[in-house]
Image (cartoon, rainbow, N blue to C red; front, side, top):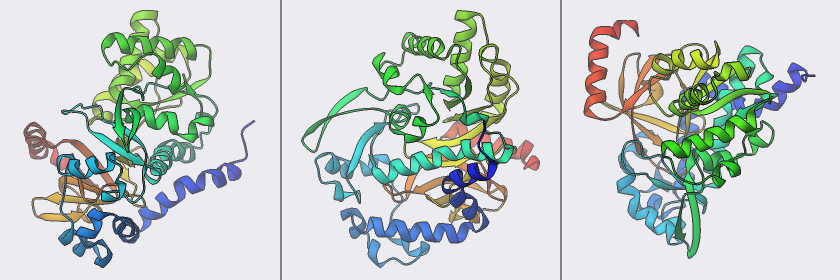
Length: 379
């Protein structure tokens, strides 16, 4: 029997409530986030160098703290590895994680307790928001297919100890307490036991494990990288002659990590998984930054957790200050990363709706300019 709706709302409100409140007044939410971030930055050597304890507003923050990318942060991260976490972090790392390296060499980053808490809370919002908006709580009653990358891949020395680390998606799945209540199938430890490779043969071993363990279970959703979700469906069809929709009754697909999820991936995914909602999430190793609010094909930021800036052709603005149709390079400040150039391009669609349209490179910019020239009137 499903719990009463009021009871469910009471349980879910701490996860979703601060996000909803931040959407009512993004400016206030971002001011609060900056205030909290500056207190954290003031603990670090990096923050002290840039006068974090003397800054009182956004303009001062922008004047004192430079925009940095992963390469610029590498010397500070090296000090963290050596045990001096206060060189850059306000608290010691709980673990280390790596990116998929889809646009170059994999980045290796620390993950603090505060960062992990934000990952787990903000990561749950797409699921919780979907359930509340549609009054569909079945998504909580079944299993979620685990199609994550392995969390045990490499070892390194950190603070004099040998530390094993792996892909962030698998690591976050393994550590996330939410999955004790909303069960993953299979468990991340079982995924890791198959090895750390990511060749086609490696993925097929994982897909077969997922298929065998999920068969006959009440699977209600999958959450992860959109191309991997699609590759799993194609594998099941090729190897077992069935679509996922023939085997399980999905309530939704929660898709991350690539652009054009709604326009490119959603129509193909529905051919395999059935006529179910495809919910977009904007996530990265560095954070869970936004998720789909409703049926419109855009994401809405977690204004209460991160500070968002955009470097446009007319200077740097806070994300919520962008007018409809304005776009530029996204800069994110988090509990670990001050004014971090994450490498993505974002465009405002008005009323807290945004579209992350790709990595910043010549091809993406050319494609976007052509899109605006011929289809910009659709915005």
